[in-house]
Length: 395
Image (cartoon, rainbow, N blue to C red; front, side):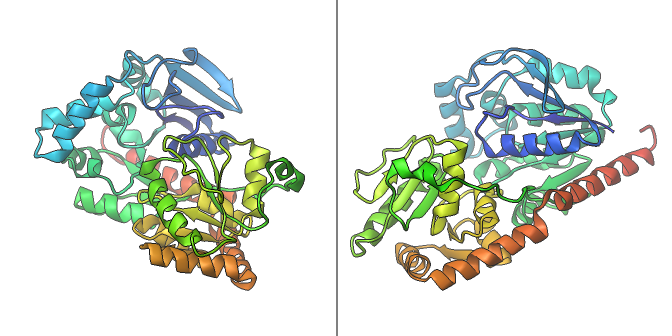
């Protein structure tokens, strides 16, 4: 089949969950299909400034077409519009304007879909909230498959979403929880659909001595990712500082860029950006991974930890994280500072518990998230969408 994948940013060096998910799926589909990625020249998801050359390129077996962004995001205007849309009853015009201002504004990408979209057998759209998906999907709705990567956030409650969610010919969800709350917002069961998660290869071997220059403690909790208030990091800092006050051996290691001040605490170790080798070694060496985010459609880093037999401590205010941990029986979850402390004590204090939960997490990954299993689900869904379109009049 000839398949297009639409995503707001694309590239091996682009940090972002939906972007990484799109890239992995596109590259694996390219083994059996002609895959083209339609994206923008932006790197920065805040400003959408043009940063990469426009045009068509071959990257790892995939044709990548990058279209220029017409204008950067007007941050002050977007903030004011967001307040109007989410803090009170808003008009459909305001809601549509919000999707336009959220960007990225890539008119040539939309024109390509308008004029060339029928040349693809299927068009997969990642992330409902960005302009290329919101405005692009209706142009090819008869062959569109939506990968919402939706969190439980206010954007799903916008009036325009019910109409938008009625358009796709199929849906790919990352977790059962995401499928449930997107379906609830749509007011109906969304079909045909599949839940795929994220495919993983067996974890590569690590070289432990890459951590030696960092002088890290032998035992630690690990946070991997953007250090950001929206990722629950401020609450993580508050809970850990309270926990560590009575436990001199407790350490927290952070790896990732920070948009939030990190406390100057002797047992909080902020490493900033790290290489893949260091990241892999951190995952292999941690006693447990901490995932404090209140909003997720799928935690890929949680799967990566289980892929190495490492248990997790996650924020159960996020139904997706709680669901992942319960299905895998690969960790513990918390809602309060007290529950965080109790979970950390159990994971840091018991090698037997860490080992058992980590093994169960790895078994879950082996059962559900190896690429042959994930691709089988994707191929089945894509085949069903094509078959349904073939029997529609005028398709």
